[in-house]
Image 1 (cartoon, rainbow, N blue to C red):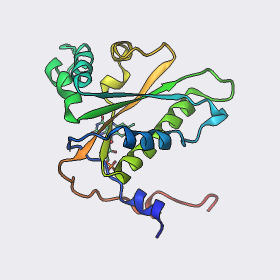
Image 2: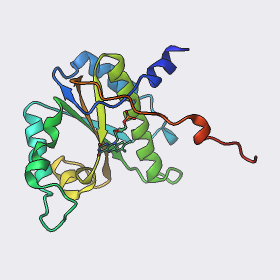
Image 3: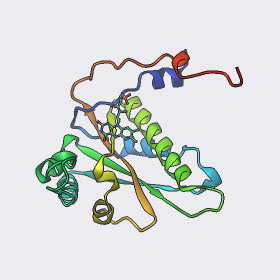
Amino acid sequence: MNKTIDSILGRSSEPRLTTPAPDRDVLEDVFACAARAPDHALLRPWRYLVVEGEGLTALGEVFARIADPEDPLMPNADKLRQMPLRAPMVIVGITRHQSHPKVPEVEESISTGCGMAYMLLALQARGFAGMWRTGAVAYHPAVREGLGLEANETITGFLYVGTPAAEKPALERPEPARFVSRWPD
Ligand SMILES: Cc1cc2nc3c(=O)[nH]c(=O)nc-3n(C[C@H](O)[C@H](O)[C@H](O)COP(=O)(O)O)c2cc1C
């Protein structure tokens, strides 16, 4: 095999995360990897917020603002408030949409997503782990506003980051033959 392939084949999300969170040195690697994302027209359409410590409590307060007792699918305020406390660090992946004539918005979000996938690999390579989460908190305007996003910015995801507290059971991965075919056949 090969180091890169081994690293990708060894990747898995870890929902149970504890301290320590990655330090500044690890984060430098993580964000250097994010900056290797493929990027149509080199728009650099991504930015990231690193949230830890008291910031996680503040993020929970922002999440709690979207509670809506009328919406049965929306978690209640307490649950929303607790969400960021599931890990010692949350990294918010933000896409800055730039209205480029040749680059549809979805491609900008894909670029951020590629960077976030590289970040997960970098975290694992440095002994940490992460889990990408979205849900209503990623798409509600009150969360965008609470985090200070500009009108042209969207949240691509929240990476919950830390040290794996317990390894999750291995997920079965589909065989390539189930999702790859030749065209025309
Ligand atoms: C865009 C995106 C959003 C996701 N949102 C959630 C989420 O809100 N909650 C969740 O449990 N998993 C979410 N996931 C899935 C997990 O991050 C993870 O990929 C999944 O549990 C499979 O584990 P694996 O990464 O080890 O294959 C999301 C994944 C992506 C790519």
